[in-house]
Amino acid sequence: MQRLAKFVILFLIGFTFGCKKEDPTPMPPVIKFLEAGLSQDKTYAIVKFEFFDNDGDLGLKQNENQGDQEYNLFIDYYEKVNGVWELKSPVVTYNSGTNQYDTTYFHLRVPFIQNKEKKSLKGETYVNLIYNNFSTAESFKYQMVLKDRALTSSNKIETTEIYK
Picture: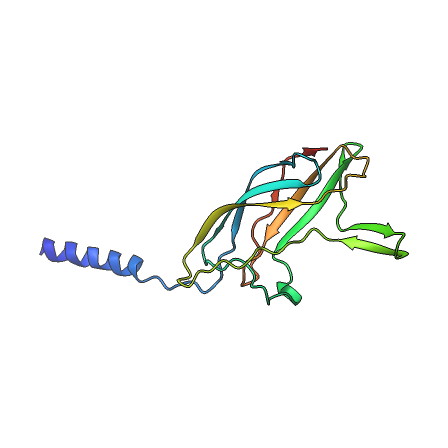
């Protein structure tokens, strides 16, 4: 009788935990800041970060470039002015050659990562980013969010302070 009771208890435990329904809610990607600094010639900043996507649906195909799929790495640029961080993106400059204002966004496209089996993706990458070298601010930083193909946003990461 004790054997039967143990078997029934083990069966119920296995049945309860072994038959979980799959959650159809997309899992958001996770990114983690690793390091940031200037290129050797100080013409651009380099930001290195880790990414993890449980759904395995990262990156945009070349022909996916309209609407919500125009960008998938969203970047805000901040400068430290009088000890206070100020959002400076998008950067708007006057172009005297065209007599018009130019707007520079910092958003980027992470290319499509082939993943037929829809397994989770994990890796490290870096992005080269422009910064306003003509600004009088001594330092700047970036905040970044990554979206997967299901348009699920990751956590937001922030770089360390980068000195010019």
